[in-house]
Length: 370
Image (cartoon, rainbow, N blue to C red):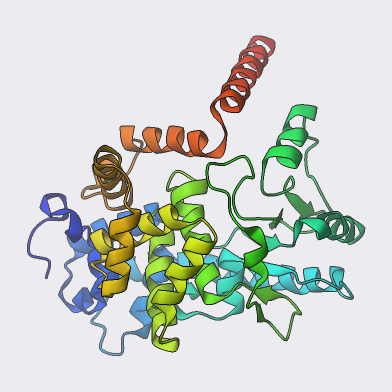
């Protein structure tokens, strides 16, 4: 049984994190504790993951019926979404049949295609693809010929924003299906403050024989998830994405003796040291992950300045590991990370122009509506 109410726990005793690290506590949970755990899991979009972990426990105690119904309902929905994703991957494979370049599945689509255990209950709402920039035109042409297109016409500004500044084209969707397709040519905006060596993403690809697609190498798969969570977004993926990182690294390290050293080497070659630092820091702080000495040394030489480190440590804990249900909503930390994500994506002058244009358009839309 948890030793104290969740709202009084220290940061490492966030109830969802406690369960993810120690699923055997299922036998000691009271209904009131289940209620709090369900709230945290729902907020993190991890109810189905919670359900899959419970199902795998051979000695699981009796789960209260209301809890079982909630878990079952979300699990059914999540498995349906995964089935849709598998169908979409199959349809996409037909669109790229005969392409003479690799097409790579990213993030959730890659995790379920590789059948990782931690992806069993993972919610998926889109399919991310990656091709080299020189093949982007052909890839988009193939998708459009297969019936994929933009669901809403974009303004000239937004079209240019995607085409010139972003790491992906505008989202596509098939007219007869609901999953969004995001076609990338790299994993971070070209205008951002890290200059990623995109060519190295296409090294050591892992083939998926059934679909003809590929996934990134173990090191690049981890680095992409780190960039996505700690650089390209404002920790929007939350604890779910950090859980992916933790589970991924544990799996890869068990399969590949030199994984950690290879990961550090790849991060340094591809200019991804800072996102990797934050991913490792968060895994240490929140999941108490034990890291090899070589990784600790990397973190020491890759750390930011004292003020930035202190602020990011506080923000990471506040956003990814809240200690009470009252902390699950918006916060200053989330706002600050939102500002940081935009600051990292664009140079100051470009960011100023972008924000001014967005503000001007928002005011005009409001006037029209009034």
